[in-house]
Length: 164
Image 1 (cartoon, rainbow, N blue to C red):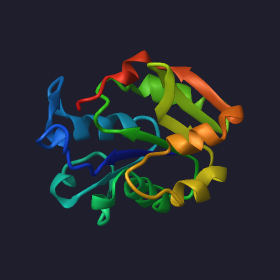
Image 2 (image 1 turned 90 degrees about the vertical axis):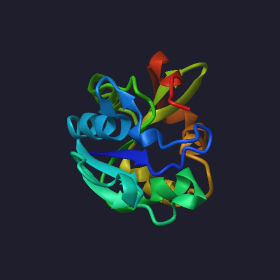
Image 3 (image 1 turned 180 degrees about the vertical axis):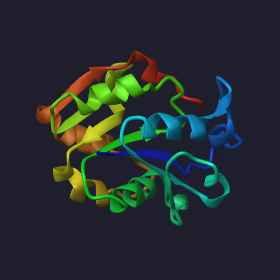
Image 4 (image 1 turned 135 degrees about the vertical axis):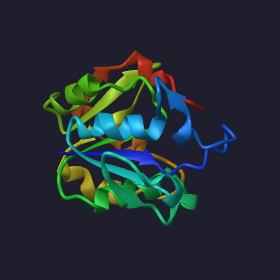
């Protein structure tokens, strides 16, 4: 299983690079890469300015201006197995939560918080084509919603907290 960290955003709402925001003594991008690497083969999708010193394989997203879908495509295209997709700006993600998603034994396992399902989320390889077909500034939520009958919801109330 690959753990894909989406970290190519431009922090338009925040006004400064959230990837470099500090949380518990490390940058959000370094923290996310470290946690991802403790669970699976970590891939960090980012832009060149954030690509150094990470405990993960780095994939540069040259289409980052398009939005989140381009980062998902870049990460999924770089691997050939099940994927767990996470964001770098959810500081309360833990390795234990990522393992719970992977261990849910469902084709899709999504984090349940704030009355919704979202990332971090696990996708079996059978959803690869749908992940690669995403376009624009949207994530994988549409895939989660389209396949609700096979989604395992894994509680993660802390998922509602992000840096934005």
